[in-house]
Image 1: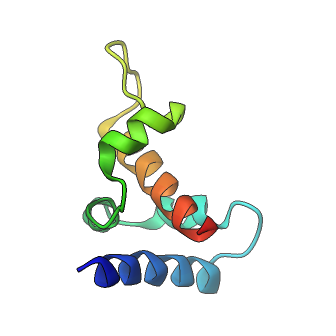
Image 2: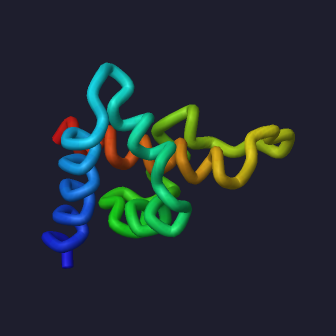
Length: 87
């Protein structure tokens, strides 16, 4: 199971590298994903959402949150892919 989740993350990273060029490659790629695809990336995240929220300020959602649900999902997805790319 772990290998298939890791493969999913790397598939997305490869797609980003193949389809988007430049400094904000992953961010632009994530912006193009459907929310269902983002959910798949999040489900494959090795640390899970509690880990993201605990370790990344941009992944925390506060009581006065002004970002939309979609924006938060995309930030989480970008964080997961960025972390996988750095591994």
